[in-house]
Length: 305
Image (cartoon, rainbow, N blue to C red):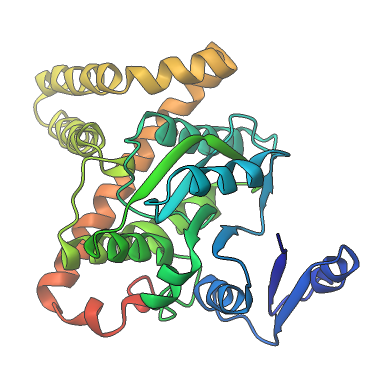
């Protein structure tokens, strides 16, 4: 076992603290993004398994042993990803909601993962290096891990989602930072990647229920606008809303079980807002793809700019 910390242009003394705890520290004077940082760490590693975690992730006492055991028990396993736990570190409502939603999404997804996840993901180092690691054209925290996963799957490699391997997310989400990250750093570049690779799998955030929810949100908005001219259209709004509630009832039951009725009621508008700007990002990405079909192949990391 070895601990490698890549200080990607840190200015808060993180590298010095890491050294004090015995970590091998690799320093970059200026930030270059997690793709470059993780690649450099993997190149310096001596073990045959590389386990990536984000800077705002806390492992459980048994996490590393679980990862190591998984690869020992399954020699055919190329990579695995874990899950956030159901006890997020930040206490504000938005952080609890987003991290619990992420936990729920992983817990209901297929054990055969369709992509990789850099916040809690392990891979055989030989395979990782042979396919070129993360794409360093992604200069910001973006979808470099998803893109790596797609390349792994195209190469016939197996990625397991091990739902029992969990880590705690410490990130504190705020409204503006959440929407900005979701729209510009996730949805837009992910749309470009989907259109490039045609990887519309019924898994994780691309499940059919999520796609239908986007359609229903926009249907409700259109019906609400129409109601200014035809008041009877308000009935359509109620119908769309009822179907949305029914379609997403499992996740709302999950929130209710974990945090109660008041918390669950507060999640609904934020959840529907997520569907709204996700659909908007897909539409913008689709137009970009039609206008500049070679854009994502040329500079994939700058799609979000």
